Image (cartoon, rainbow, N blue to C red):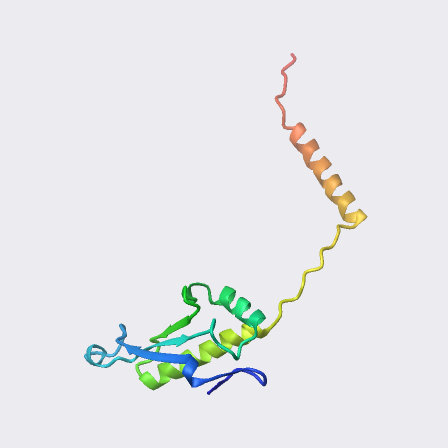
Length: 140
C-alpha cells in the first residue's frame, strides 16, 4: 500500500515492478545483478484517483505516460535494488501529490493608464533618437 495523502492510497495490485540491469558504477556486479527498477502504475484504471487528478497526472508525467494509461518510472541511481525501489515509489508518490494540487486560476489584468503613458513616452524618445541617426548633409 502506497499512501499519497489522507484521501489517496495506491493498492499494491496497481503497481508492477520489474528489475533490469543498470549501467554505471558497480564493477563486475553491474553485469550480474539487476539493480535498476522499472515501476509501472496503472493510473488510467486506478479507482483511487479522481478524474481531475488523472488529467493533471497525465500532463505532469509527460513521456513517462504510456499509451495504455500507465505511468512508467525507471530508477538506476543506487547500486542497491532495494534503495532504487524506494526511490521509484517516492518519485511516483511525489508526482501524484503534484497532480492533486489544483493550479491557481490566472486572473487577467489590464495595464494602468500610467504604464501606458510611460510606454508611449519611451517609444517616442526612442524614435527621436533613431531619427537623429540619419545621414548628415555636408553644406560648405
